[in-house]
Image (cartoon, rainbow, N blue to C red):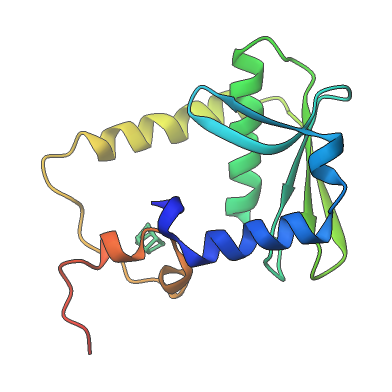
Length: 144
Ligand code: SF4
């Protein structure tokens, strides 16, 4: 759904304009269903830019999944930096003991959801309005 999301497009624009030289220095990497916009192949560092003004667990989970895919493809010592240009902050993310099991647990939980005969009930969250799946999740809802 991300290709139709204005939120994702805005985030991409912030990423590109905050670090204009980045596209020259780093490469885009598409592998096993993920697409890393800025990968520093020399130092094996994933750079992920977030437009958010707070650090969220979902951001960390996203790059942990990237690291998981890199590990699965033989890039064992990759790490990540999540950059928050609005806050002028960086969060370093390494691959730690237990991460493999954690990510595989998430993958298994998602697989179970995908294989359900019907969608689970909608859980309305504050974050939904900014989520790229909003139209999909709320398609059966009557708007107030
Ligand atoms: S319930 Fe749907 S719209 Fe809300 S956060 Fe989850 S995926 Fe996004």
